Length: 190
Image 1 (cartoon, one colour):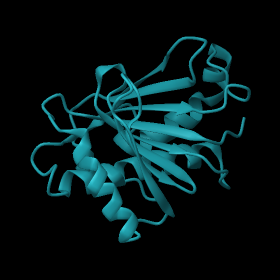
Image 2 (cartoon, helix red, strand yellow; image 1 turned 60 degrees about the vertical axis):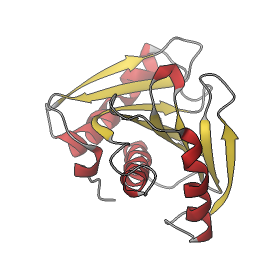
Image 3 (cartoon, one colour; image 1 turned 90 degrees about the vertical axis):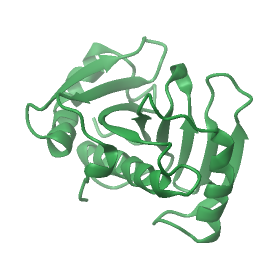
Image 4 (tube, rainbow, N blue to C red; image 1 turned 135 degrees about the vertical axis):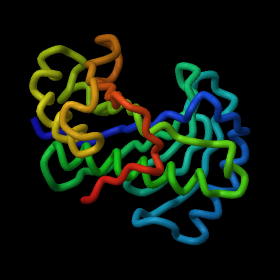
């Protein structure tokens, strides 16, 4: 199974207390400075939607958002366009892009010292219900790709992995490192 449209969420530590509105000028600045490798287009404010996407940075190939879905603050990277490569490489790209955005946000003046991302847990979803329904069969088909990713992220055997969500939700896997790690300490080389 060769998936596209990978969505990765890196959670903020519980001690992180921020005003999501402070992300709006930060994201606008990223657009103006043409920050990163991807084309950035606009910012959307969905803070009024309970459990919604919060504040989104709209890009050509992907969207980023600071959200509080399920009452857990985190950064979401949502790949929209197709990529070349294996499923494992696509998972790695999405998590790597999310981690890079986390590192950058932690250093932005409004968030410095207030926002810290937890590199010890991530939630990865496949945004294609037809190709990857949220079933045990999909999990078995993609398990080795997720193991490859988490081995690269935390080391072989240094994590737990679980198929999550209900059948009506996107297919998702949650990975958790066995020992605490800050997102700023992690790197995924291409």
